[in-house]
Amino acid sequence: MFEQFGFIPYRLRRKIRNISVRHELIRPTAEDSGKIRLVLSFDYEREFGNEQGELSSDVFHEILRILCEYRVKSTWNCVGHVAEKYPETIEHLIRDGHEIACHTFGHVAPLKMSADDLRYDIHKAKEFFRRKFTVELWGFRSPYGAWSHALMKILITLGFRYNIDRASKSSWQNLHWIKCAGETPGRGEKILRIPLVSTDGMYIRKGISPPEMLSQWLMYLQPEHLGKCFAIGFHPWMLGKEKGRLAAFRNFIKIAASNPGVVVVTGAEVAASFVPSPMIEK
Picture 1 (cartoon, rainbow, N blue to C red):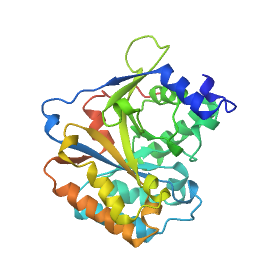
Picture 2 (cartoon, one colour):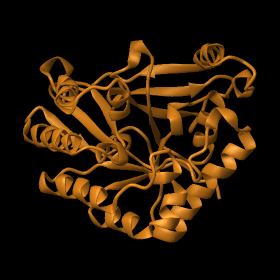
Picture 3 (tube, rainbow, N blue to C red):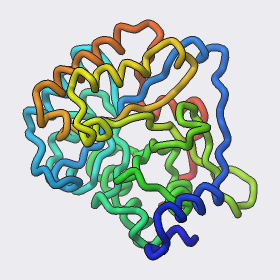
Picture 4 (cartoon, rainbow, N blue to C red):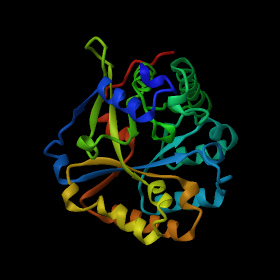
């Protein structure tokens, strides 16, 4: 697809991408219409994905203590290089019952790689986590929030059940299928998209204070969002840069966990309701 060519401006590539895939909305069932299903999505990349230096292990453990205190499980989109360098942290996540999802092996830029190189990197990550930690990666979160027609086809081929990413305005809070154009209708040619409605990076780049961040997060827990299923994204190294951010995060988790209209789930738990166990390419 043209979107793989770097000389084409991103806005044009995005238009090509939106034309080349079909979004099929999933309507909430009667059972789901009275609650918000919230996925807490953490991009665990440490120094491999940002210029801010290493994430303090104290911050990592404080975030896990908060999640444990309020008995919520979350999805951690892990970079393979992080797992190689800090295997004890991955083991801690697994031990606490959190989901491990894929954030590529090398925190690569999907739109700047050939399809073959991208597939190799993602397959390498999937095999590494399976071999090293005996976990299957069902979910995928793209570095830099960039996705493409080619990337979706790779994920489908490699047996991923879902991906977490930003959605178009028409489906920004709704679960939907992404189906690649040009495929023969049949099993395994579409992937579930859990829409990401916000990330801490959005607020931090705008200079929003921790209390304002909390206010923004709480907006998504209001009754008008009942029946929706979406993810809110976090970066541990961003939360840990300022004590006020961690305090805001704690308050958000406390309020979400105590809200009877909110169910905090992992991405894999959401996908299990819609996606049968896929064929896994060796």
